[in-house]
Amino acid sequence: MKFFATSLVCQLDKLTIEKEPIASIDLMERAAEAIYREFIELVPTGSSVCVLAGQGNNGGDALALARMLLKDDYDVKIYLIHHGDFSVDCEKNRERLLYEFPDSLKVYNHEFVAPEILPETIIVDGLFGSGLSRPAAGVFADAIKWMNESGNIIVAIDIPSGLQGEENKFSEELAIVKANFTLTLQFPKLSFLFAENEKYVGEWKVLDIGILPKAIEETHSNLFYLEKNDILQLIKSRSKFAHKGTCGHALIFAGSKGMAGASVLSSKAALKSGAGLVTVHGPECNRVIVQTAIPEVIFQSDAKEDYISEFQDIDKYDAIAIGPGIGLNDESASFVKNLIEKLDKSCVVDADALNIIAKDVTLLDLLPEKSVLTPHPKEFERIFGESATSFERVMKAQEAAQRYNIIIVLKGANTLIAMPDATLYFNSTGNSGMATAGTGDVLTGMIAGLLAQGYSPEDAAKIGVFLHGLAGDLALEEESYESLITEDLISKIGAAFVALKA
Image 1: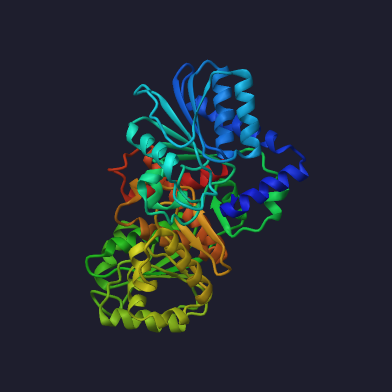
Image 2 (image 1 turned 60 degrees about the vertical axis):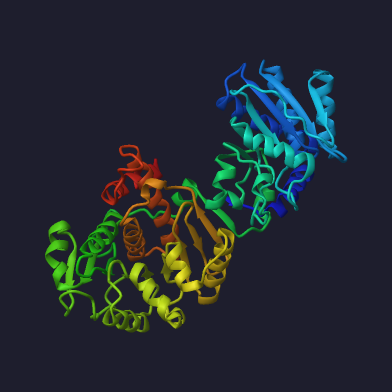
Protein backbone atom coordinates (compact mmCIF):
# COMPACT_ATOMS: atom_id res chain seq x y z
CA MET A 1 0.00 0.00 0.00
CA LYS A 2 1.31 3.36 -1.00
CA PHE A 3 0.78 6.02 1.65
CA PHE A 4 1.56 9.68 1.95
CA ALA A 5 2.93 12.44 4.11
CA THR A 6 0.04 14.37 5.64
CA SER A 7 0.97 17.43 3.56
CA LEU A 8 -0.18 15.52 0.46
CA VAL A 9 -3.48 14.18 1.78
CA CYS A 10 -5.39 17.40 1.06
CA GLN A 11 -4.03 17.28 -2.48
CA LEU A 12 -5.41 13.75 -2.91
CA ASP A 13 -8.79 14.89 -1.57
CA LYS A 14 -8.82 17.76 -4.08
CA LEU A 15 -7.90 15.49 -6.98
CA THR A 16 -10.70 13.10 -6.02
CA ILE A 17 -13.19 15.96 -5.75
CA GLU A 18 -12.15 17.34 -9.15
CA LYS A 19 -11.72 14.15 -11.16
CA GLU A 20 -14.30 11.73 -9.77
CA PRO A 21 -16.07 14.23 -9.56
CA ILE A 22 -17.65 14.50 -6.11
CA ALA A 23 -18.60 17.43 -3.86
CA SER A 24 -16.31 17.84 -0.85
CA ILE A 25 -19.25 17.49 1.55
CA ASP A 26 -20.18 14.20 -0.12
CA LEU A 27 -16.60 12.94 0.22
CA MET A 28 -16.82 13.81 3.93
CA GLU A 29 -20.12 11.95 4.15
CA ARG A 30 -18.49 8.94 2.53
CA ALA A 31 -15.68 9.08 5.09
CA ALA A 32 -18.19 9.37 7.93
CA GLU A 33 -20.10 6.35 6.63
CA ALA A 34 -16.87 4.32 6.63
CA ILE A 35 -16.17 5.42 10.21
CA TYR A 36 -19.77 4.63 11.19
CA ARG A 37 -19.61 1.09 9.73
CA GLU A 38 -16.46 0.33 11.70
CA PHE A 39 -17.70 2.04 14.86
CA ILE A 40 -20.86 -0.05 15.07
CA GLU A 41 -18.68 -3.18 14.84
CA LEU A 42 -16.79 -1.97 17.90
CA VAL A 43 -19.67 -0.51 19.91
CA PRO A 44 -23.10 -2.15 20.29
CA THR A 45 -26.29 -0.26 19.38
CA GLY A 46 -27.78 1.63 22.31
CA SER A 47 -24.41 2.34 23.90
CA SER A 48 -23.58 5.68 25.47
CA VAL A 49 -21.31 7.82 23.27
CA CYS A 50 -19.72 11.22 23.86
CA VAL A 51 -18.52 13.00 20.70
CA LEU A 52 -16.05 15.88 20.90
CA ALA A 53 -15.80 17.75 17.61
CA GLY A 54 -13.49 20.57 16.58
CA GLN A 55 -13.97 23.33 14.05
CA GLY A 56 -12.17 21.77 11.08
CA ASN A 57 -12.86 18.85 8.78
CA ASN A 58 -12.01 16.34 11.49
CA GLY A 59 -14.81 17.91 13.50
CA GLY A 60 -17.05 17.67 10.44
CA ASP A 61 -16.39 13.92 10.27
CA ALA A 62 -17.25 13.64 13.98
CA LEU A 63 -20.52 15.57 13.61
CA ALA A 64 -21.55 13.41 10.64
CA LEU A 65 -20.76 10.28 12.64
CA ALA A 66 -22.79 11.60 15.59
CA ARG A 67 -25.80 12.20 13.34
CA MET A 68 -25.60 8.63 12.01
CA LEU A 69 -25.34 7.20 15.52
CA LEU A 70 -28.35 9.18 16.70
CA LYS A 71 -30.37 7.72 13.83
CA ASP A 72 -29.29 4.27 14.95
CA ASP A 73 -30.52 4.66 18.55
CA TYR A 74 -27.19 5.29 20.23
CA ASP A 75 -27.29 7.54 23.31
CA VAL A 76 -25.10 10.36 21.97
CA LYS A 77 -23.91 13.57 23.62
CA ILE A 78 -22.20 15.98 21.23
CA TYR A 79 -19.86 18.83 22.14
CA LEU A 80 -18.57 21.26 19.52
CA ILE A 81 -15.40 22.99 20.65
CA HIS A 82 -14.08 26.01 18.78
CA HIS A 83 -12.85 29.58 19.07
CA GLY A 84 -12.75 30.52 15.40
CA ASP A 85 -14.44 29.93 12.08
CA PHE A 86 -15.62 26.50 11.04
CA SER A 87 -14.38 24.84 7.88
CA VAL A 88 -17.02 24.92 5.14
CA ASP A 89 -17.86 21.24 5.45
CA CYS A 90 -17.81 21.26 9.23
CA GLU A 91 -20.37 24.08 9.15
CA LYS A 92 -22.54 22.10 6.71
CA ASN A 93 -22.47 19.06 8.98
CA ARG A 94 -23.30 21.24 11.98
CA GLU A 95 -26.36 22.49 10.11
CA ARG A 96 -27.37 18.96 9.07
CA LEU A 97 -27.10 17.74 12.63
CA LEU A 98 -29.16 20.59 14.06
CA TYR A 99 -31.78 20.24 11.33
CA GLU A 100 -32.42 16.60 12.26
CA PHE A 101 -31.64 16.81 15.97
CA PRO A 102 -32.13 20.45 17.08
CA ASP A 103 -31.24 19.96 20.75
CA SER A 104 -28.34 17.57 20.30
CA LEU A 105 -25.39 19.96 20.30
CA LYS A 106 -23.58 21.84 23.05
CA VAL A 107 -20.92 24.42 22.13
CA TYR A 108 -17.79 25.43 24.06
CA ASN A 109 -15.88 28.48 22.86
CA HIS A 110 -13.34 29.52 25.46
CA GLU A 111 -13.96 27.34 28.49
CA PHE A 112 -14.34 23.59 28.58
CA VAL A 113 -16.80 22.17 31.09
CA ALA A 114 -16.30 18.46 31.67
CA PRO A 115 -19.37 16.50 30.55
CA GLU A 116 -20.98 14.11 32.97
CA ILE A 117 -20.65 10.67 31.42
CA LEU A 118 -20.92 7.07 32.53
CA PRO A 119 -17.85 4.87 33.04
CA GLU A 120 -18.95 2.79 30.03
CA THR A 121 -19.45 5.80 27.72
CA ILE A 122 -17.32 5.66 24.59
CA ILE A 123 -15.58 8.95 23.82
CA VAL A 124 -15.11 9.92 20.16
CA ASP A 125 -12.16 12.25 19.53
CA GLY A 126 -12.83 14.51 16.54
CA LEU A 127 -11.00 17.67 17.62
CA PHE A 128 -8.06 17.85 15.21
CA GLY A 129 -6.94 16.08 12.08
CA SER A 130 -3.43 15.46 10.79
CA GLY A 131 -2.70 19.03 9.75
CA LEU A 132 -2.10 20.40 13.26
CA SER A 133 1.01 22.61 13.25
CA ARG A 134 1.26 23.61 16.91
CA PRO A 135 0.42 22.07 20.28
CA ALA A 136 -3.21 22.10 21.36
CA ALA A 137 -3.90 24.91 23.83
CA GLY A 138 -6.70 26.57 25.74
CA VAL A 139 -10.13 24.99 25.54
CA PHE A 140 -8.81 22.24 23.24
CA ALA A 141 -6.01 21.27 25.62
CA ASP A 142 -8.53 21.18 28.46
CA ALA A 143 -10.76 18.85 26.46
CA ILE A 144 -7.83 16.55 25.65
CA LYS A 145 -6.77 16.50 29.30
CA TRP A 146 -10.30 15.54 30.32
CA MET A 147 -10.42 12.72 27.76
CA ASN A 148 -7.11 11.29 28.89
CA GLU A 149 -8.04 11.45 32.57
CA SER A 150 -11.55 10.07 32.12
CA GLY A 151 -10.52 6.42 32.10
CA ASN A 152 -13.08 5.79 29.34
CA ILE A 153 -12.42 4.08 26.02
CA ILE A 154 -11.47 6.66 23.36
CA VAL A 155 -11.95 6.20 19.62
CA ALA A 156 -10.00 8.73 17.54
CA ILE A 157 -11.10 9.76 14.06
CA ASP A 158 -8.22 9.67 11.55
CA ILE A 159 -5.50 10.57 14.08
CA PRO A 160 -5.46 11.21 17.83
CA SER A 161 -5.90 14.95 18.33
CA GLY A 162 -2.59 16.67 18.99
CA LEU A 163 -0.46 13.98 17.34
CA GLN A 164 1.40 14.93 14.17
CA GLY A 165 1.37 12.73 11.11
CA GLU A 166 5.12 12.33 10.72
CA GLU A 167 7.59 13.58 13.31
CA ASN A 168 5.85 14.30 16.58
CA LYS A 169 7.63 17.50 17.64
CA PHE A 170 5.28 18.35 20.48
CA SER A 171 6.73 17.59 23.89
CA GLU A 172 3.56 18.40 25.85
CA GLU A 173 2.17 14.91 26.37
CA LEU A 174 -1.02 16.15 28.02
CA ALA A 175 -1.98 17.92 24.79
CA ILE A 176 -2.21 14.65 22.80
CA VAL A 177 -5.17 12.29 23.01
CA LYS A 178 -4.33 8.77 24.20
CA ALA A 179 -6.76 6.76 22.11
CA ASN A 180 -7.61 3.10 22.52
CA PHE A 181 -8.63 2.83 18.88
CA THR A 182 -7.82 5.01 15.88
CA LEU A 183 -9.94 4.77 12.71
CA THR A 184 -7.70 6.36 10.11
CA LEU A 185 -8.88 7.43 6.67
CA GLN A 186 -7.54 5.77 3.50
CA PHE A 187 -3.89 5.60 4.60
CA PRO A 188 -1.90 4.99 7.79
CA LYS A 189 0.07 7.91 9.16
CA LEU A 190 3.83 7.52 9.39
CA SER A 191 3.76 8.41 13.09
CA PHE A 192 1.53 5.36 13.77
CA LEU A 193 4.51 3.12 13.00
CA PHE A 194 6.73 4.48 15.78
CA ALA A 195 6.99 2.84 19.20
CA GLU A 196 6.81 6.09 21.15
CA ASN A 197 3.38 6.86 19.66
CA GLU A 198 1.71 3.57 20.58
CA LYS A 199 0.35 5.14 23.78
CA TYR A 200 -1.51 7.73 21.66
CA VAL A 201 -2.68 5.65 18.71
CA GLY A 202 -3.68 2.37 20.39
CA GLU A 203 -5.02 -0.18 17.91
CA TRP A 204 -5.50 1.34 14.48
CA LYS A 205 -7.31 0.41 11.30
CA VAL A 206 -7.28 1.96 7.83
CA LEU A 207 -10.72 2.72 6.39
CA ASP A 208 -11.18 3.01 2.64
CA ILE A 209 -13.06 6.24 1.88
CA GLY A 210 -12.81 5.98 -1.89
CA ILE A 211 -9.93 8.29 -2.74
CA LEU A 212 -9.57 8.12 -6.53
CA PRO A 213 -7.11 5.32 -7.44
CA LYS A 214 -5.68 7.39 -10.29
CA ALA A 215 -4.95 10.24 -7.89
CA ILE A 216 -3.07 7.81 -5.62
CA GLU A 217 -1.17 6.39 -8.59
CA GLU A 218 -0.17 9.77 -10.00
CA THR A 219 0.85 11.40 -6.72
CA HIS A 220 4.47 10.67 -5.85
CA SER A 221 5.34 9.16 -2.49
CA ASN A 222 8.31 7.18 -1.23
CA LEU A 223 6.28 5.58 1.59
CA PHE A 224 4.84 2.07 1.36
CA TYR A 225 3.13 -0.24 3.85
CA LEU A 226 3.72 -3.85 2.79
CA GLU A 227 0.59 -5.98 2.60
CA LYS A 228 -0.25 -9.41 1.21
CA ASN A 229 -0.98 -8.31 -2.36
CA ASP A 230 2.26 -6.32 -2.55
CA ILE A 231 4.26 -9.46 -1.77
CA LEU A 232 2.18 -12.00 -3.68
CA GLN A 233 2.99 -10.34 -7.00
CA LEU A 234 6.72 -10.72 -6.32
CA ILE A 235 6.66 -14.50 -5.74
CA LYS A 236 8.06 -16.58 -8.60
CA SER A 237 6.46 -19.83 -9.71
CA ARG A 238 8.71 -22.87 -9.54
CA SER A 239 9.30 -24.88 -12.72
CA LYS A 240 8.08 -28.45 -12.89
CA PHE A 241 11.65 -29.38 -13.79
CA ALA A 242 13.31 -27.51 -10.92
CA HIS A 243 15.98 -29.32 -8.90
CA LYS A 244 18.33 -28.40 -6.10
CA GLY A 245 20.88 -27.11 -8.56
CA THR A 246 18.44 -24.65 -10.11
CA CYS A 247 17.04 -23.37 -6.80
CA GLY A 248 20.25 -21.75 -5.68
CA HIS A 249 23.08 -22.37 -3.25
CA ALA A 250 23.41 -20.12 -0.19
CA LEU A 251 26.57 -19.86 1.91
CA ILE A 252 26.15 -18.67 5.48
CA PHE A 253 29.11 -17.68 7.64
CA ALA A 254 27.78 -18.27 11.14
CA GLY A 255 28.58 -19.53 14.60
CA SER A 256 31.38 -19.64 17.15
CA LYS A 257 31.94 -21.60 20.35
CA GLY A 258 28.65 -21.62 22.27
CA MET A 259 26.76 -20.04 19.34
CA ALA A 260 26.01 -23.04 17.14
CA GLY A 261 22.33 -22.18 17.39
CA ALA A 262 22.80 -19.15 15.14
CA SER A 263 24.12 -21.48 12.41
CA VAL A 264 21.23 -23.90 12.86
CA LEU A 265 18.50 -21.27 12.83
CA SER A 266 19.77 -19.24 9.88
CA SER A 267 20.57 -22.24 7.69
CA LYS A 268 17.27 -23.99 8.40
CA ALA A 269 15.40 -20.78 7.55
CA ALA A 270 17.31 -20.51 4.27
CA LEU A 271 16.25 -24.03 3.31
CA LYS A 272 12.65 -23.46 4.41
CA SER A 273 12.57 -20.34 2.23
CA GLY A 274 13.32 -22.39 -0.88
CA ALA A 275 17.08 -22.51 -1.36
CA GLY A 276 18.13 -25.73 -3.11
CA LEU A 277 21.37 -26.03 -1.17
CA VAL A 278 22.71 -24.36 1.97
CA THR A 279 26.29 -24.48 3.21
CA VAL A 280 27.30 -23.26 6.63
CA HIS A 281 30.91 -22.21 7.13
CA GLY A 282 31.63 -22.32 10.84
CA PRO A 283 34.16 -23.41 13.47
CA GLU A 284 34.90 -27.11 13.79
CA CYS A 285 33.38 -27.17 17.30
CA ASN A 286 29.94 -26.57 15.76
CA ARG A 287 30.10 -29.24 13.05
CA VAL A 288 28.44 -32.13 14.90
CA ILE A 289 25.77 -29.88 16.42
CA VAL A 290 24.77 -28.35 13.08
CA GLN A 291 24.78 -31.60 11.10
CA THR A 292 22.84 -33.39 13.82
CA ALA A 293 20.26 -30.62 14.14
CA ILE A 294 19.78 -30.13 10.40
CA PRO A 295 21.31 -32.89 8.25
CA GLU A 296 20.13 -31.23 5.03
CA VAL A 297 22.82 -28.56 5.49
CA ILE A 298 26.37 -28.89 4.20
CA PHE A 299 28.92 -27.97 6.88
CA GLN A 300 32.25 -26.47 5.94
CA SER A 301 34.70 -26.37 8.86
CA ASP A 302 36.98 -23.43 9.47
CA ALA A 303 40.64 -24.00 10.29
CA LYS A 304 39.96 -22.67 13.78
CA GLU A 305 38.24 -24.83 16.36
CA ASP A 306 36.20 -22.12 18.11
CA TYR A 307 35.61 -19.29 15.64
CA ILE A 308 35.66 -18.29 11.97
CA SER A 309 38.96 -16.98 10.62
CA GLU A 310 38.95 -17.64 6.88
CA PHE A 311 36.91 -18.24 3.78
CA GLN A 312 37.43 -20.50 0.80
CA ASP A 313 36.02 -20.33 -2.72
CA ILE A 314 33.00 -18.02 -2.61
CA ASP A 315 32.37 -17.64 -6.35
CA LYS A 316 30.34 -20.83 -6.68
CA TYR A 317 27.60 -19.63 -4.33
CA ASP A 318 24.51 -17.75 -5.42
CA ALA A 319 24.07 -15.86 -2.15
CA ILE A 320 26.18 -15.16 0.92
CA ALA A 321 25.18 -14.17 4.45
CA ILE A 322 27.64 -13.10 7.13
CA GLY A 323 27.37 -12.59 10.83
CA PRO A 324 25.04 -14.69 12.99
CA GLY A 325 26.93 -15.66 16.13
CA ILE A 326 30.45 -15.28 14.67
CA GLY A 327 31.81 -13.31 17.63
CA LEU A 328 34.00 -10.22 17.76
CA ASN A 329 37.55 -11.49 18.20
CA ASP A 330 40.31 -9.91 16.11
CA GLU A 331 40.68 -12.82 13.68
CA SER A 332 36.95 -12.90 12.97
CA ALA A 333 37.00 -9.14 12.44
CA SER A 334 39.85 -9.53 9.93
CA PHE A 335 37.92 -12.33 8.22
CA VAL A 336 34.86 -10.08 7.81
CA LYS A 337 36.96 -7.26 6.34
CA ASN A 338 38.80 -9.59 3.94
CA LEU A 339 35.56 -11.22 2.84
CA ILE A 340 33.83 -7.90 2.18
CA GLU A 341 36.79 -6.80 0.07
CA LYS A 342 36.45 -9.95 -2.09
CA LEU A 343 32.68 -9.97 -2.54
CA ASP A 344 31.41 -9.04 -6.00
CA LYS A 345 27.66 -9.43 -5.42
CA SER A 346 25.21 -8.25 -2.81
CA CYS A 347 25.21 -10.17 0.46
CA VAL A 348 23.28 -10.25 3.74
CA VAL A 349 25.09 -8.70 6.72
CA ASP A 350 23.78 -9.30 10.23
CA ALA A 351 24.59 -9.53 13.93
CA ASP A 352 28.32 -9.65 14.78
CA ALA A 353 29.31 -8.68 11.24
CA LEU A 354 27.37 -5.46 11.82
CA ASN A 355 29.13 -4.93 15.13
CA ILE A 356 32.48 -5.42 13.40
CA ILE A 357 31.49 -2.81 10.80
CA ALA A 358 30.49 -0.48 13.65
CA LYS A 359 34.14 -0.51 14.76
CA ASP A 360 35.35 0.31 11.25
CA VAL A 361 32.64 2.13 9.30
CA THR A 362 34.94 2.45 6.26
CA LEU A 363 33.81 -1.12 5.50
CA LEU A 364 30.47 0.32 4.43
CA ASP A 365 32.19 1.78 1.37
CA LEU A 366 33.47 -1.68 0.42
CA LEU A 367 30.14 -3.49 0.53
CA PRO A 368 28.81 -4.59 -2.87
CA GLU A 369 25.92 -2.46 -4.05
CA LYS A 370 22.50 -3.39 -2.72
CA SER A 371 23.89 -5.54 0.06
CA VAL A 372 21.21 -6.13 2.70
CA LEU A 373 22.04 -5.03 6.26
CA THR A 374 19.65 -6.29 8.94
CA PRO A 375 20.35 -4.38 12.18
CA HIS A 376 18.14 -4.11 15.22
CA PRO A 377 17.96 -0.53 16.59
CA LYS A 378 21.03 -0.86 18.83
CA GLU A 379 23.16 -2.32 16.04
CA PHE A 380 21.94 0.47 13.78
CA GLU A 381 22.95 3.11 16.34
CA ARG A 382 26.42 1.62 16.74
CA ILE A 383 27.03 2.15 13.02
CA PHE A 384 25.04 5.28 12.19
CA GLY A 385 24.72 7.08 15.54
CA GLU A 386 22.01 7.54 18.12
CA SER A 387 18.61 9.04 17.31
CA ALA A 388 16.35 11.03 19.61
CA THR A 389 13.18 9.70 17.95
CA SER A 390 12.06 6.89 15.67
CA PHE A 391 11.46 9.45 12.93
CA GLU A 392 15.07 10.60 13.15
CA ARG A 393 16.25 6.98 12.97
CA VAL A 394 14.16 6.40 9.84
CA MET A 395 15.66 9.50 8.22
CA LYS A 396 19.16 8.26 9.07
CA ALA A 397 18.39 4.88 7.53
CA GLN A 398 17.07 6.56 4.41
CA GLU A 399 20.19 8.71 4.08
CA ALA A 400 22.58 5.80 4.74
CA ALA A 401 20.86 3.53 2.21
CA GLN A 402 21.27 6.23 -0.43
CA ARG A 403 24.82 7.16 0.52
CA TYR A 404 26.21 3.61 0.51
CA ASN A 405 23.86 2.15 -2.11
CA ILE A 406 22.71 -0.54 0.32
CA ILE A 407 19.41 -1.88 1.63
CA ILE A 408 18.83 -1.41 5.35
CA VAL A 409 16.34 -3.70 7.07
CA LEU A 410 15.81 -1.99 10.42
CA LYS A 411 14.17 -4.68 12.54
CA GLY A 412 11.33 -4.12 14.97
CA ALA A 413 7.58 -3.69 14.95
CA ASN A 414 6.71 -2.51 11.41
CA THR A 415 10.25 -3.37 10.27
CA LEU A 416 11.60 -0.68 7.94
CA ILE A 417 13.25 -1.50 4.62
CA ALA A 418 15.18 1.55 3.39
CA MET A 419 16.13 1.31 -0.28
CA PRO A 420 18.99 3.07 -2.10
CA ASP A 421 16.48 5.14 -4.11
CA ALA A 422 15.08 6.66 -0.87
CA THR A 423 11.95 4.49 -0.92
CA LEU A 424 10.81 3.37 2.53
CA TYR A 425 8.82 0.19 3.06
CA PHE A 426 7.18 -0.63 6.40
CA ASN A 427 6.03 -4.15 7.22
CA SER A 428 2.48 -5.02 8.31
CA THR A 429 3.13 -8.52 9.70
CA GLY A 430 4.68 -9.75 12.94
CA ASN A 431 3.99 -9.47 16.65
CA SER A 432 5.69 -8.91 19.98
CA GLY A 433 5.97 -12.65 20.62
CA MET A 434 8.83 -12.52 18.13
CA ALA A 435 10.88 -10.49 20.61
CA THR A 436 12.93 -13.56 21.45
CA ALA A 437 16.45 -14.82 20.78
CA GLY A 438 17.18 -16.05 17.28
CA THR A 439 14.42 -14.45 15.23
CA GLY A 440 16.99 -12.17 13.58
CA ASP A 441 19.05 -15.21 12.55
CA VAL A 442 15.93 -16.62 10.90
CA LEU A 443 15.37 -13.42 8.93
CA THR A 444 18.98 -13.47 7.73
CA GLY A 445 18.57 -17.03 6.53
CA MET A 446 15.28 -16.30 4.80
CA ILE A 447 16.67 -13.36 2.86
CA ALA A 448 19.79 -15.36 1.92
CA GLY A 449 17.61 -18.25 0.76
CA LEU A 450 15.56 -15.92 -1.44
CA LEU A 451 18.67 -14.27 -2.88
CA ALA A 452 20.03 -17.71 -3.75
CA GLN A 453 16.91 -18.40 -5.82
CA GLY A 454 17.54 -15.35 -7.98
CA TYR A 455 15.32 -12.79 -6.32
CA SER A 456 16.67 -9.25 -6.51
CA PRO A 457 18.02 -7.87 -3.23
CA GLU A 458 15.05 -5.47 -3.06
CA ASP A 459 12.48 -8.24 -3.54
CA ALA A 460 14.33 -10.66 -1.27
CA ALA A 461 14.28 -8.09 1.52
CA LYS A 462 10.57 -7.33 1.10
CA ILE A 463 9.47 -10.95 0.76
CA GLY A 464 11.73 -12.11 3.59
CA VAL A 465 10.57 -9.47 6.03
CA PHE A 466 6.88 -9.99 5.24
CA LEU A 467 6.96 -13.80 5.39
CA HIS A 468 9.11 -13.70 8.54
CA GLY A 469 6.41 -11.64 10.27
CA LEU A 470 3.59 -13.74 8.81
CA ALA A 471 5.23 -16.93 10.09
CA GLY A 472 5.36 -15.30 13.52
CA ASP A 473 1.67 -14.43 13.31
CA LEU A 474 0.78 -18.00 12.34
CA ALA A 475 2.92 -19.37 15.17
CA LEU A 476 1.07 -17.11 17.60
CA GLU A 477 -2.18 -18.87 16.75
CA GLU A 478 -0.82 -21.93 18.57
CA GLU A 479 1.42 -20.19 21.11
CA SER A 480 1.26 -17.22 23.46
CA TYR A 481 3.27 -14.01 23.23
CA GLU A 482 5.34 -15.30 26.12
CA SER A 483 5.91 -18.87 24.90
CA LEU A 484 6.70 -18.29 21.23
CA ILE A 485 10.28 -19.31 20.37
CA THR A 486 12.26 -19.21 17.17
CA GLU A 487 11.69 -22.87 16.26
CA ASP A 488 7.94 -22.12 16.29
CA LEU A 489 8.62 -19.37 13.78
CA ILE A 490 10.68 -21.59 11.48
CA SER A 491 8.03 -24.30 11.59
CA LYS A 492 5.52 -21.83 10.11
CA ILE A 493 7.58 -20.55 7.17
CA GLY A 494 5.92 -23.07 4.85
CA ALA A 495 2.47 -22.15 6.17
CA ALA A 496 3.32 -18.50 5.55
CA PHE A 497 3.97 -19.23 1.87
CA VAL A 498 0.67 -21.12 1.69
CA ALA A 499 -1.24 -18.32 3.43
CA LEU A 500 0.30 -15.76 1.09
CA LYS A 501 -0.97 -17.65 -1.96
CA ALA A 502 -4.39 -18.51 -0.50
